[in-house]
Length: 631
Image (cartoon, rainbow, N blue to C red; front, side):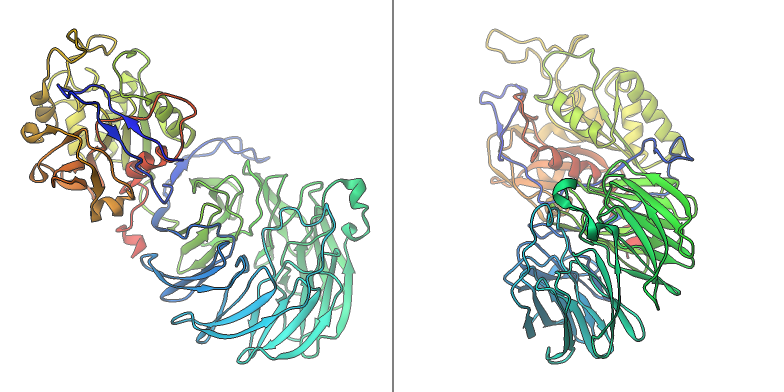
């Protein structure tokens, strides 16, 4: 929903400048640190390393497909009916194949082709280089699921390529073996129940889980049934239960001679691969166990929905080794990267756990639910979200950043509009709220530890605690010169003399009695002599787009472009409306000015403006496309 941002009275501006929507196509990301509720760890230790978000690409529709990643390309499906090819290094879109139905299935790459299923049951083979269609195969009429089955069906059966054959289950209750080159049917086996999962392919057998609550073992060469295993959910009265406890959304995984899978009946099963007899079971009922088990050596990592836990099980016996609550439902599988177990949550986070203990290492906020399992290649994590974004994440980066938002309840008058809404929004994403005393301590600590950091000023007040006078020796300036970052909206720092509660002396017309713009220039070391008040429309520059700015503003103040380090938005007159003054620190740091306006004070506040500010704050601090680990 578009909004406007109103500027507070600034200098001697006769017309109140109005900010046009400054909307980000991509949400930024932020680390959240808090207690974890697992049964052995009472508190979450601070992370020693943080992830680096190398790039984010906005596809525009939900992404529930697990990406397929090659040396150069990321292939991913979307709810808009497209299969996308993205540049692996930059995230830039290379091509889109129109499937005509949501592509929630996960692509499989083999040779020169990409194989993928759409929600209407069609299997496509498209050329990996340019997305040209090779062949398509249509399944029969889908088997309708009677309520309560079918709820929260985020996934569809994905194809698996083995040697020269593509194996896939269809919504028509049939499992197909297709010629990889032509799409011709080699065999098909009717199960009588639709499938939502990819088959698990072994040397002579494929294992297929179906929505009748059964696991089937089929001869890989002929499709002949060898055995079937019946879960508890297959015999439950769903009308009595009140929700789906029969369907199986978990792709089976093979550990030695045990096939392991979870069911919506709340149980993780370990079944003998040769006989189909139960070896063990672990119950998390009434929660679903939807994520496919991830196997490492003799350990199976499983996820749950309403139980909100990740668990590690002994794959031979089912004995639970540890479990950790992550505070949100989990539908994807665990990804193992080095010593870390990473999962995406319905709450929109990627959570990193120590694989050996389950202890939470860090949390990263993606902004929207994550329903599809991530893909891993060369230590990089690639995943999508319901917000239509695809992320590339390097899970071991530099020291984790300190994120803060300044707001002091002492100041109550003449503040940037909507600052309280901005404070609350950022605090919900893990930003530490600071008053004036805490701000001074924060700056002093960063001067000592040089930890990457940013402070968003939700009040356009520079308190005496960090700037007792306008000079380059005050704490505020020393923080900036040490590589710190400040994001500022509203009146420039010290531009207007304020009383003890932030009030500005004004004449009978409501304009400030005194303007001290020279003090702003002195404390920032910026050339503010060229500042002008105007209403020229502004648009993002290439650098502004790199920071994530997509829509311009109606500038309230502008500077000559030569007076700033980076121009984020230009007015029609060619002047800087949003800009950065850098002090020699890493790219993305320094003093960031986003205009003379704030957030409207009326509630509810549309959220499309708030992520824009957050995105600018986290550029170069959390989102670091130039980080060494992203190259």
